[in-house]
Length: 343
Image (cartoon, rainbow, N blue to C red; front, top):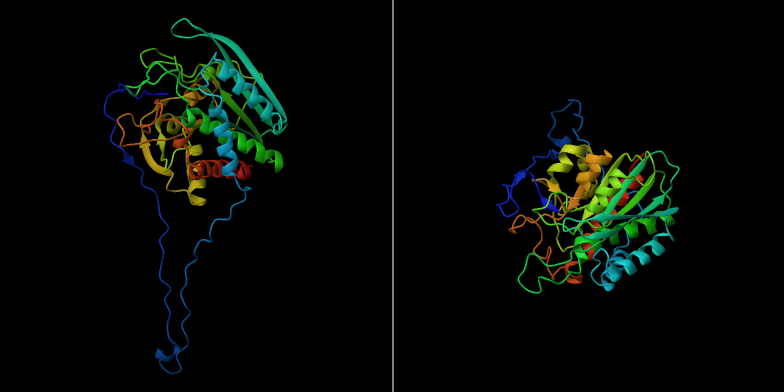
């Protein structure tokens, strides 16, 4: 993915704007002692204020250990660069695994020419859950990994593992599919794993997100609709921070508000931050623009780094050391709660 919002990739990040959010005012209860009342004067009624009850979670428990396994399993195949043998083997495993949980699994295959005129055998993987339900939620992530390290000086020509940038989102979604199999939701859920997201270069327009571009223009079912969509990208790092991203704000601000509020309700306010950052050309950009499905991006934002992304982004440090179960839990549990509270 690349930052777009009319700024150069290497320019300084925009100043972070903190969004003001309302807080609940707590009032003291006025207690009056009966002994202090004048004789024969009626007792005054005690003044009280209604305090909101703690939020009650309705979704089943998200198993972070299992999600971690799904991330680790992808990484065990090696770098999942489109057209490579590890990519094929990992894709075969994901299809086989998702068939255990979903009502239907579709492989959308296409031959796409990259910016360097290389033919890519793209393979989008779609898992349908409760396919007859009229209310549908689209959940997506990309499953390929970067073919080279472009943010470091060591082994720049070697592909990276992409544990966080790619595998983390897929791991969360696979665990969600497993949970929905055990406790079916009332709504329909479509999990789309996009291929060929991370093969581009900033100087080449539309060279990223090739799988989502293709899917958005060639939906796996004619006339496919979803009420809203959520993209996961880099959702596994320790103490990750997720900000409001500009494309998501413009296309689906009500979805952003709902998801972030759900995260806060569940106690994950230290992950779901009310900050605004510049727009990103990520898979959700094309889902919004071409497929017209209001979709947000939950993506790690690091205001302290020069790129705006975590320091391991597009480097060989994006391995299993970049994955934390607590972060997987925060994201996975929030998504499950969104699913089970959607009517």
